Image (cartoon, rainbow, N blue to C red):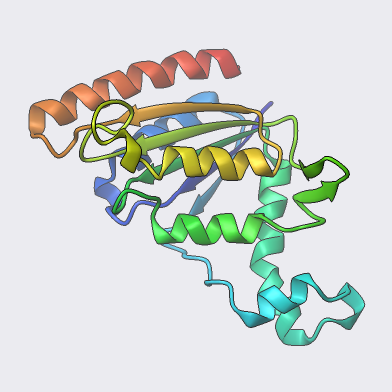
Length: 201
C-alpha cells in the first residue's frame, strides 16, 4: 500500500484547477493519503530563529529555535514517510505561490534532507516519486513565454536537490484564454493523470 503526500498551494482555493486534478490523482493512487494544504494552513515564513537553529547543535538550541524548526520537522517527516509526493501549484507571476516556496524552505535542510560530499551536494530523500500538477494562464512549456517559466524548473530543481530523481509533470496551460481552453486543459490533464495513476499502482 502506497503512502501518498498531497501538497496543495493555490490561493484560488476551491476554484483551483491544479488542486482539483492533483486531489483526484492522489485519491486515485489510493493507499494512505496525507494532505498538506498550504492555502488553508500556511507555514510560518522562516526567520532568524530558524536560520540560527540550523547552525546550532540540537542540545544548544533555544526554545525559540526549537519551535522555529517544529514545522520543518513535521514537513520533512511527511516527506520521508511518503512513497509518492503530489505537488499542486498554480503559476503566480511566473513562479510558485509564496506558501509553496515556504514549504520548500522548510524541507530543504543541510544534514537532514541533503548533505555536502566530496563531489558536491547529495540529496537524502531518495527512492520516492514526485508528480507536479501545474496550472498557468498562458502557455509556458513551449513558445515565446518558455523563458518566463520559473515554476516547473524551480520545483524540479529543488526536489532534485534533496534527492528526487523520478519527477513527472502534468500541465494545464492557457487557462486564461476562455472556457474552451480551460475545458481542454482539464481534459488533457485528467487523461494524463489517469495514465500516471496506472503506473503507480
